[in-house]
Amino acid sequence: MNYMLLIYENEANWLKMSPEEQGKIFGEYMAFTESILASGHYVSGNPLDTTNTATTVRVRDGKTLSTDGPFAETREQLGGYYLIQAADLNEAIAIAARIPAALAGSIEIRPVPPMEGAE
Image (cartoon, rainbow, N blue to C red; front, top):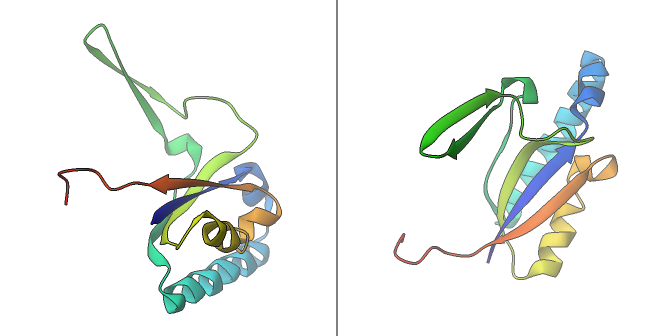
């Protein structure tokens, strides 16, 4: 089964870090990514740019509306994701717990069922 691991953190904390602190965390992410590549769990993953680069799209009464920024103000922002293969939710939880952001933010796990007719 595929699982999406959505990484939430307070991006303001990241922006306050020194380049050395950011480099240390980046190294931790690289080590984590290498470990799930080696174990065969990795499918894909990427960081996301900061929320000030986001655009939110809505369609109302047939009109497309776009606004700058995220949909809602929150304490934590979606900062990136990993798509993994895991035998079950328990294995996905064990993998998610190793993501560096789990120490200060949160990791949301969502099963990704296959789309019928898309394969």
